[in-house]
Image (spheres, chains in turn cyan, blue):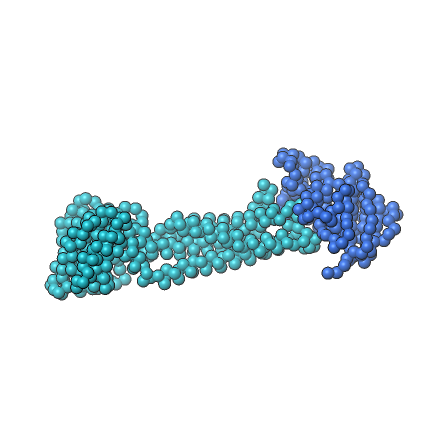
Length: 385
Length: 212
């Protein structure tokens, strides 16, 4: 009890130094938390992927299309429950800086496959019956101030020309891990347009989304689908939605790795700062530790004092940093919603913050503790006066 | 390694108030540290009562110090973040006393040195004399057999020094504490019953009743 009292009072004895160290730790933990959240947001699509969905694309590359006629053949494969399809549209709103994901889809089956996109029944009906109709995510609509009934014009970057849509529905995510910045419209509408400008590219899709009856045999179903189109002009590659999303992520792997490395460098820097603080503190208290040893306190007690002090300082800074991570990430997420539609501080990030704080305290206290324990009492007492 | 003490053999009787005098570098503090078990001799033995403290391990020596020796230093050596009563209570945390008993013992010890009104003050809020009295209270709170004092008046003004020395005299006379005091102040040495001189690591053989 007395040792606890001493270590708490020691931790805040030099107020300026303790405050600056705590501030440094708070900033480092905040930076670490934000960087880890950036990494998590890269994987948000992977996390949101369903085990009961497969994605079929052209085996050569995603940029090559597949015939729409494959729909029925895929539907006949054992284990397939539902088939939908779509294309990446890649349109921009007014200006190229207004980027958001936009797809043309087969609407009935697509929203049946994605129950996580929650649509109002009346709006959904209006969307399904209007070929020029479109659905936007709640955040996307809010960002541009769109309302139901508004005409939205996207400028095609792949498919030339201006494409007009009428906003018929706004979807909400089932929970806060669902991307609410996407834009969907009817595949048939795009197909009609393509028939006029590039007739030979009509009746083709970029991908098939497939719902399976049993997620545990999804891999077998994928193999059967690909076998069905073996040696055809457009062979397919079918994989789980998770694997498909991970494949996209692999393109940005270097960036994700760099961010992860920077996050650990931040922790290493603050470790050096805290270690320096603890070294200075312990050197100043060499006399105190010598007195305690003189009175009969042992190495264990000295260890508790130094590790405890490091823990108090580090955990105080870490707690402040963790608390600040939440509002800061909200601001960060709203400013960068285009790039990170789901920007949430995960539980894993908080656990990593706590683990980082403990590691900092532990490693920062090792050398000062060793020094304080090893120094002879007589030498320690000589430091006083 | 530089030798500090040579061929020293002497006895201190129970209840004696011994002053060790000598010039700087004569080995007074080293000898005191050896007797108090906070330093180890390269050879020879030191018996305190029935215990040869040179044979004790670090842990055993720490336990022996906690039970048998009270320390008074020139610079008081109080823990700056603890209040006076907490400083006095500190050695009692190594005993089996209850929280309440510890506090009662500490308050009693502070009352004995006349500081019951300064219990809740931090060392930085007290004068040198008062801090040294707190240090004495800490030294006697465990009721040790021996008190070792290293230049206990070295950092004090004359009035405070006299108070501290009178207090040590009382502890020796009234409570029967064996006191070993290192000093090079003749006025402090005059309060001791027995005087010994160290010079360049050698102890003068002629222990005598203090003529001062």
